[in-house]
Image 1 (tube, one colour):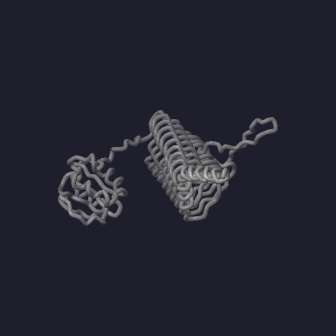
Image 2 (image 1 turned 45 degrees about the vertical axis):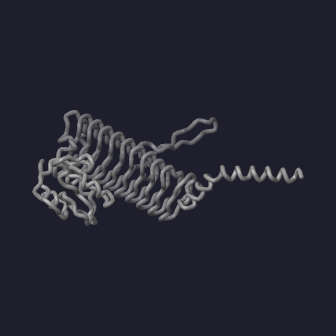
Image 3 (image 1 turned 30 degrees about the horizontal axis):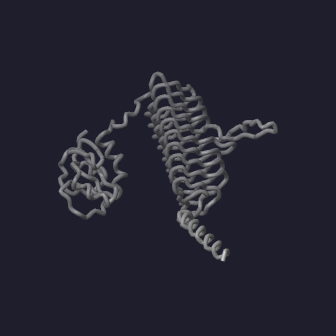
Length: 343
């Protein structure tokens, strides 16, 4: 739906610079944009792209002071306003299912809110509660006694097992599994493994986003928790009884073992591993492939395997790089010692 630059600027409460009557028909990256598109840069360091882009308008940070022969809209956080612009210009760009498909299997005891959309072959179990405006895509499953808030988006092939609690505005991407059994077994004298029942639940709080193929195990007795506003990338494993605080960021292929606790605003790079029963303080940052085997206090930056404060880890890595030279030096010294011994 075509909109003018002026209309878009008003929508996002931006500062318009240039021609506000230009018509915008699409959204694109700044290097790929064409006439009629609106693009954006997130940082002032990318301002050189403004001169070369074919976009009719560019959304930029307010800190940019240089003038350009281009219509600009200045905002505090350019990347944050994109969702509003997409809904404004391209309202059907993400084709959510509409209404309840006739192949969906919904228990008569389930409570379905207003304006809920349920796609083909979805299964909704007994006594499930689905909040208003929630969208559930095809082939997803919501188990008995689970409760989901308003304005959620559940993409295809998601499994939400029984007695799971999900807040509002939660997004769960394809093939995620919420509430699978925790990995709990007792090893018997004959070497066989007896399954320990996993009777707890999973609580996903408001505004959480869960990536594709994430697995979140239910607790043994109590609860596994993903705190408000946390974002979990694809292919992450969260074990039973893990507590993740609010506003954490967990990147792909990370794994958090049972009963570990993360504070608020913890950030994990890709492939971070956390052993069981450790406590990670608020605002801890762990670089990619960090192996965390003990607890760390708040505001620590970690790196390496095993995890160490980043400054120490960097010194160790630098020292390892010097080992070949040190080895050659030791060989040389040993040779000189042998020569002296012969004399």
